[in-house]
Image (cartoon, rainbow, N blue to C red; front, side, top):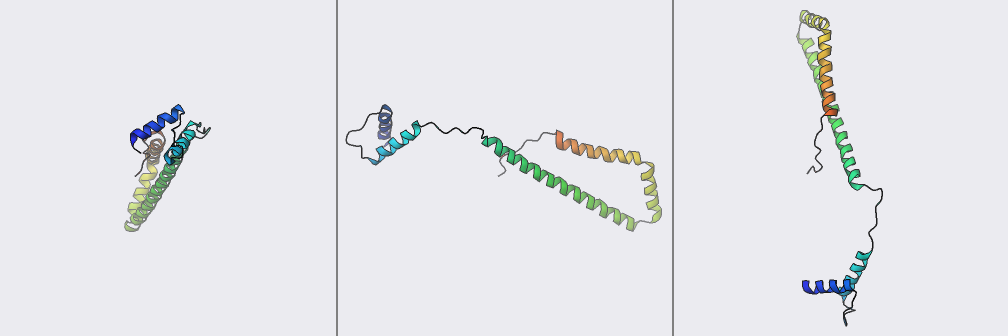
Length: 138
């Protein structure tokens, strides 16, 4: 069948007329079946929000990955600082360690302020900065 014949079949089917002598034609029966199915109302999917569900799952997965990443970064930083502290304590003499300890104790407010400011910046960056979420990660 060519395009013109298909178009004619569609128009005749829409008008409800029959083709004489071609009622047994396979293509015609397929077109009848197609148009009968197209006349039916589609099923309504109430309360199913597929897009929102998919995006929600993507966001949950990204949040999980981000938490794992931050947890690993924190663990690596703690291990590196601990190792560096141990190395410094082994390589320096007690006079230098006492001087460093006395300096940290004397300036504990400043050290606490620096540490808390750093932590606050990290928390605010995580929760307040809006990032574009790439939905397609190919």
